[in-house]
Length: 263
Image (tube, rainbow, N blue to C red):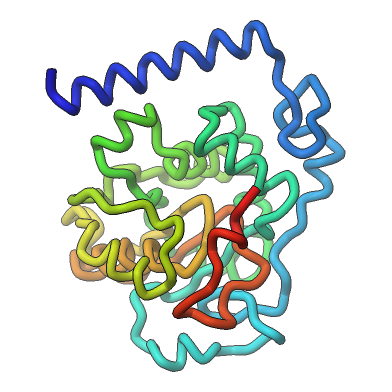
């Protein structure tokens, strides 16, 4: 039996196990554990948007708001023209992403996507969105997707597009090689891990692309995806993630990402 077949069977089995568990164990809020829903009204209201103390170009947390942070000054020709995270990676959002990504609670995707939609109300998104031709998620490798049964970034992006009335383009960017998990790697290691891991389809030529992902850490994966899109002829790439760490830009070479994103 091939690895692909085994991964597909695992994904199918996990899917049906999730359905069975939902029948016997009703949903509990990822924030307060109250029974009845995956995200109760109280916890939904408690989610904090990202701080205004950011770099206006890349969206990374800074000591104070700045037009261009040291990293952007060092890489002025980066492939991502504008990037933001919708919320801070703490509380209900942190629990929600963990349950969506690792707990197979796919019902959380449309609930969490509401924060992506809300982020579009903040300037300059209303202006930028006039130019976006399609929304595409950061992809998983086919083998890993079959093993998990889905791509959490794709579920978020699809729900986001349905709620915001945007064109969903899940196949504009593909992951062409397997990579190691980014957990436990510092910024330089993450960048090397995903270098040349993505390929964009010719359809992106002349298009403005909006990348969507669950968590903004160092930005290595988003940058690798954007590089692939620009190499394929995209006009511009923007990025929007569901969450970002409150603080991860003090030491780009050795930030403790495991601590920042631990539950």
